Length: 143
Image (tube, rainbow, N blue to C red; front, top):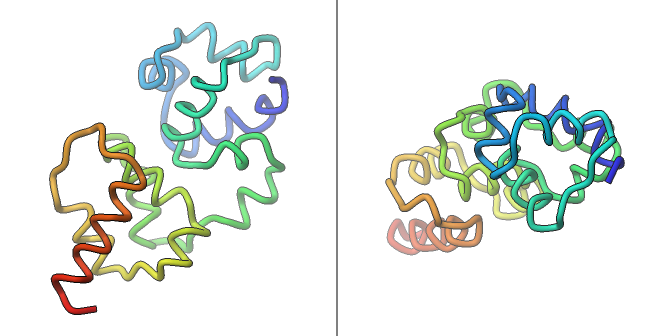
């Protein structure tokens, strides 16, 4: 699992999380996160998915090259960037915002990001749930 080591720290810091904070989100202790970042400790597939989701990236991004991650970032001030940077944003919404390829394919407008963010949903709602919510918002709005 040392493939995530080069990217994990940068992604965690970009999200504004400490090692302990990330660990708390994914059910690992700070020491485990530290060892993941140094490449001396592995992680289960389940925890790998949880880490990617907490950081607002895909597992592919987490395992991929840093250039790929940078290329997928939003412009400064983009509403999705604000969601990714918000430690209190729902995980499913962060996962959607972190999947720029999907967000671009869906052509989510700034107004739609604002609407998605304004609706309070249970924390267990997944990225797919937010896509369904977006479709519902569009159906109601006639788009």
